[in-house]
Image 1 (cartoon, rainbow, N blue to C red):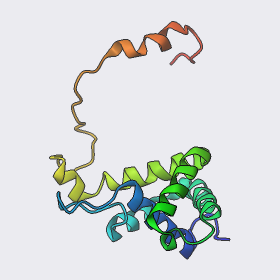
Image 2: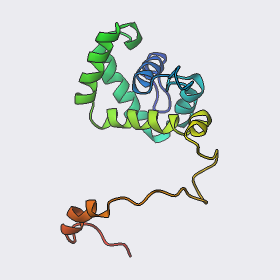
Image 3: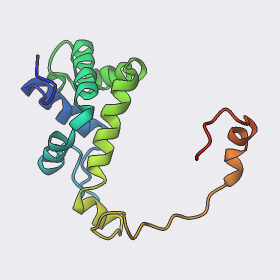
Length: 149
């Protein structure tokens, strides 16, 4: 069992495999997948407080697969991923979030999206106005939320 600050070699291999399934490489757009070595290195270096949940997700994935995920045929791998999605709970959601956040802060990905290679703050990024009426059900709940001081 790995300590709380690292993943075992098998967990790292399964992370690479599931990351490629979440965001595969695109030859058409010349984009790396989430299994790209630089993106994987970023994931491992920045797991921090998410390490425990990501390790739990990878352990659950390993139990479902019964073998290293990369050793499965693509159809079997997809079936394991579907079961993982439905039964993985918060650890699976954390794993997916980690994959997405590391992928979308990679310089190559940012460039392809036409974004500046900089931190989002202090300048910020302008977002288009959305449909504020979507918040009406939350507002209708009244005082169930803690008020800011």
